[in-house]
Each structure stands twice: as C-alpha cells, then as structure tokens.
Image (cartoon, rainbow, N blue to C red; front, side, top):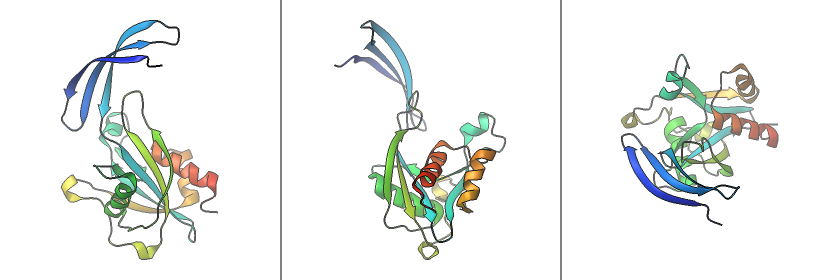
Length: 192
C-alpha cells in the first residue's frame, strides 16, 4: 500500500550538497490523510571501514576537523573516526578501497561488507555501507592524510583495540559510525 504522494520539491540550497524542501501527502496508520513538509539534506551515499590487525590487536582510525561538531559544542571540532567517504559514482567496495588509501595510506585487498545503515534518517538521505578489513604494515603505501585538493587534513591513528573501546566510554570517540564498527568488531571477536 502506497501511503506517500510527493506534491512538490523545492531546492533550498545547492551549495555544498543539496537541501530540499518536500511537500507531501501521507496517509497515517489511522487512515487519516495529512499534508506535510520536510527538509532533507542530500549528500549522496557513503562507505566506511574499520581496519584491524589481529596480530598486534590494533585498529586504524583517523582524526579530522568536522565543522558541524564545532558549532554544536565540540571545543576543537576534531573527531576520531573510521575512514569514510562518499561513493562519487563508485560502488561501495571500490569507494572504500580508494578512500582507505587516500586517508590512511593503506592499500587493502579484500573487504567484508557487514551492514548498511541510515545514520540520520530524520534529515539526511545518506545510506552508509559499513566494511571491515584486515591490514598489515606491508600494505602501507604512503602516510595518508587525504587529498590536498579536497582540503583534507587527516591524521592517521593506529591504536590498540582495547584503548579504542575505552575511548568510547571516555567520550574521546563520539562518531556514530566508528562506535558501530568498533562494537561490531567486539561482538564478532575480530581482534580476540
């Protein structure tokens, strides 16, 4: 049963990504029809990955500046997070391999897709593809840090897995996708 009928879509901003205002009719679970408006931010779909090394019990994370967190009270604006990026017309696996090498310097081979999730479905259209992959030091091609032409200024962190879990509790790691992947690794025993 289709209970949504889009009446109008307006572009409010098309600067960095696209902000749309959508007017629609919706038939609720009570059978009542309502006309509503919502705004949705379309930035495209993305992929994220947790790199782990079972032998050393370590994970590779990144630290980078995130303006939205700064204006919402994060004093430095920096977040510790898993490597991630937008698909940019690639499939999710190709995207995450590209982003991993750009951001961390590691050229990985096999990746394992673990799930997909909408991270902020009340306002953002993005579907995020989650991956894990084993890494070793011989996969390191360069220092990482992201692309200069994209103004990326990314610090690569290799941390003990247990320390990364403690950083969730201490509040040093507040990024949702990173928390999800670290907890996934814990539940699945990837580093035990």
